[in-house]
Length: 559
Image (tube, rainbow, N blue to C red):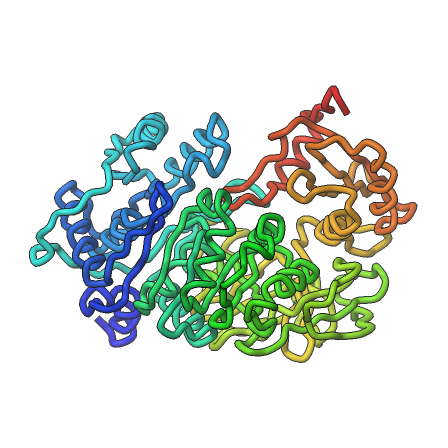
C-alpha cells in the first residue's frame, strides 16, 4: 500500500489502534441520562463488532446498509464495517420520512441499487427493513447490531470505498454517492485545520444518514479523539434547552447545524434557561446545509451574548454531499461578512449590484433575503470558481454556477448516467448551485434548478421564502415555494399546510415584488403532510412541482 493510502486509512481508522484512555464519547440515553465510553472502550467494542460482522458473513468490499439510530451501536457498527474492509451505507430511519408507504418506497429503491448481501438494522426496525429488502430479491440477511468481546482475533482489512452516501434527494430521487477513503480523509483534514477542535468537540444531534451529521457532526471529532457527545435528532427537538445547557456546563468548542437548528433554539430557549451557564468556550459554530438567514444568526448571537458567547464564533459555510462535506468556511475568529445586493436583478454571467457590506453582529437584520452571507473562502486544497451558462469562469461579483475542484470531491455516483459523469468526476464538480465570489469569499444564492427565468432574470425561490418568512406571512415549517414554466408562462407557487386567512394578499404581494407582471403568482393551501420532505427535512421541490403539474395537489377543504 502506498504511503498516501496508508496515511488516509490512518486518518480514518488510526484511533482504533491507539485509542485514548482519558478522552471519550458521551451518548444520550432514552431516559435522558448520559453514558460515557472512553475511546479505548469504544475501540474494543468496535473491533468486536467487526469480528461479529465477519462471523455473520460480511466480507471486504461488501456494501452494508445501516438502519441504526445515533448512539454507541451506530459508532461500533459503522467503524466495525470499515475495520474489516467493508463499506457502510447509512440509511434514514423510518421516523425521518414520516414512515408509512413513502419510507418503504424509498428504502426499497435504495436497497435495490445496492443489492446488499447483509444489512444491519436496530431490532425495532428489523421487520420493516427485512420486508422491503425481501421485495427486491437477492436474499439479503438483516442482522442486529452486536459485538464479540475478542478484539485480539478481530479481522482487519483495508478498503478503498469509505461510504456509499445517499444524497437527500431535494431535486429528485436519492443518488448513491461513492465517497472514497481518500475523499473522506482529505475532507476530515480540511475540517480539522479549519475548525481546530481542541480537547472538546461538540454535542451533536444531526442525523447521521446526512453528510453534515456523519462527517461534520461525528467523524471529524471522533477520529481526532476529542471529548464528544452524541444525541439523536428527536432528543434535540424534545429537549433543545437541555441540549444547549450541555454547552454551558462543559467546555465543548464546536457546534454544527443548519438554519433549522438555530430557529429551534430561538423558538424554545428563554433567558431563564441560560442562567448560570457559560458559553465562552464555544468558538466554532458552523451554519450550513441550507440557505443561511443572517437575521436568525444575529438573534442567536444576541440570545447567548450575555452568557459569554462571542459573535466571532459564528462560521457560516458551504458544503454538499458530492464534496464529501465542507467546501468553504468563514475562518475561526473572523466576523462573518454580509453584502446587500441591490434590486432584484439575478442574471447568470452578469455582475451583481453590491450596494454595501457589513459584518454580522447581534443587531436585528431587516430584509434578510436582500443580504447575502459570506460562506468564507475555499478550505485548504480546494478550488472554487463561478461559471456562466457556457461554463466560462467569471470574475468576482458575477453570478453563476459554483464549480468545485479538490481531493475531497467524491468519486462519483454508483449509478452514474452520462450527464452525471459530465457533472462529477476526476475531482471536479459542477454543483448546480448559484453564487458569486467577492474578495475571495463565496456567497451562495440558491439552486439553479429551483429558480425560474422571468424577463431574462433568475428568480430564486429561496429569496422569496426568506422574505415571506421575514414578513410573517408564512411559517417556514409549513410552507414551501416552487417555481417553473407552465404553457410558456413563468409561475411561482406557494404551497402551505396552514390556511393563510387574511394573509393571502400579503403573500401574493411579496411574490409579485419578485416577479413583476411577467410571472403568475399562486397560493395553494393543502392538508398537513402533503409537502414531501427529504431525509434531512428539506422540501422535495421537484417532486412538489411535478405533483402540481399533474394536478395531484388538492386544496384543503377548510382553506
